[in-house]
Length: 440
Image (cartoon, rainbow, N blue to C red; front, side, top):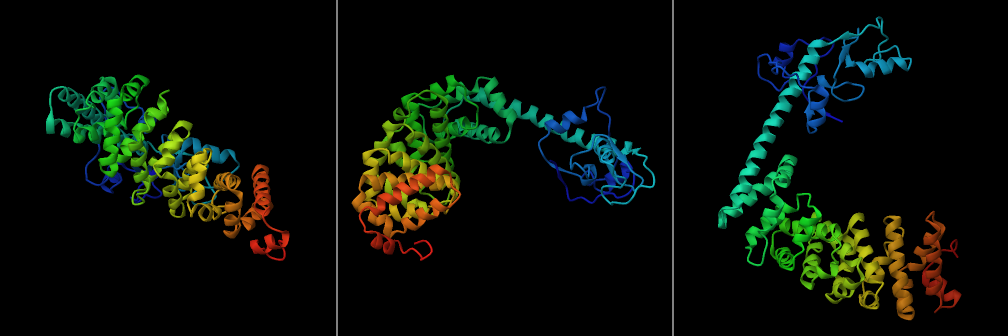
């Protein structure tokens, strides 16, 4: 849907082209807009489809569909609509003007040729300007790629920086890089002797491109992965996010085993990234990559060994639902190993933080939290079950059982409730739970 601009609408009249221009419909500036485009007239529908969404003058927008008009017609009330839309309105039995709700005293529709010409002229200008920019971008991208074959040092850094900025905002630039062999050229700049500055810019370019399988496989060379990890640990926040996204693309886009990528240095770098709450985009990117890495069992113990569990647990209270689900998913994966369960048990914040999440965030969060609590309570029932009850687990489990959650969650809650009650008599368990008389 197009966003109408705030320019004033010309009411209740078939527009005069010159008046519309003077009134600012085309953005101010007097004079009549030329509407000739050589021997070939541009197709309005094609132009609208190819142009990116933009503010469109209100007078060009059909009040019914809120889309630019192709064939505007004016009713006896002075209101103008797209022909197909107003005909549909009439076919539904309406005999009124949709905008004013006035009853129509004349059902004729007058083609608004002047407005149609104005719409075509306005979109043609935008379209031709876009095409010109695209041609300029293509030419500049080709020039940069040629220069990268010859220049070195700071000149190479500046060229890569310009290329990064262009591919971030222009789809044409991305396509030009791919079609002119730019991916291979840019990837070749990563290596054991690549400077930090060049590496940052190369990664910033590559992460914005659609990399094929051969390109991904080339980037999985140990020297290139090592450089990416080093830059992840030392770069700016933007560079860290780019490195994280690129490594994620490499793991997900190939059959390469993540354990061959997931070095201790990478895991530590990602932990630092997800703990930086000043940059939410970095937190999301880091957690997504950690989830992908931890989905492969051989990596989990390494992640536990770098102290990941207590650091992730401490993050829980301040996370939004998206990040919360990612953290819980990672912790659930780690709880599948004895080392992970031990780390969860030994962290004093695990049970209180996870219990609070039951029936508080999404159902998916409740399911993941239940799975984590089950794992550690089953692992050390005498120690963890009593801590969980003191943290208010029993009352939370009863809420889950009585709620409209899916049967699997209710069954798991009942099992966990039973496990927690084994060390108590009924009376003591009820008093420990601080349950109300109604729940008793």
